[in-house]
Length: 298
Image (spheres, rainbow, N blue to C red):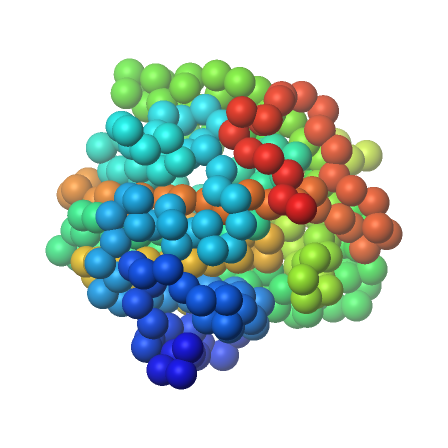
């Protein structure tokens, strides 16, 4: 704890952590300091972590119970809580999203660890959704506070059907093998800090009470504030690194700019609570049971 250093990497999001060996069990004071830093900076970046899958899971457990790898996508062989984020498994997740928001209680935090890194490209962009909310003009903030959005894993893709090859079609079929539909507040109140953040992203498909076309225009307008360059950290991966981000108040995007070269990360996520809006109401599920994937955080 005495040697722990937290160094900001941008004004609005991201800090590099040094002076702690996260491959070893952490004492309560160190965990509390890391949690405080995560609340402040939304994303923590660790170099030279010297972790395997078991070590990544052990580190994530310092922040709560961990989830299964994914509600529908297979885990790493022999590690049911570890999701392979692999270029060989399909295209990069090059759309803005918050992890698994189509279930009732999405993960509170996500860890990504570098396994195979291309010689160029392959960055991960992470956005501060609280800064985005603060950037909204007052009339838009008032509107956003009242809105609820339906999130689903079964949504219309931008790629035409005729452009989808067999591998991509199989990946989509697996991803949507169980349909999930959940309604979340567009503005989520963070349970630890009380901050308000825009809780939208790629799985948010429709605003409750609006048509699909109207919903798209409203969501695109709000999303433009999330992805403002000032609210982003652009993380260029190196070997043996880990990124921890607060999934309750960030979005992220995997940049598909590495010519299909091998790129593999491993993801472990920490179970989260049910989101709450500014009016104190909780999210609610419409379709899909995710109890095999995650418990509800206390």
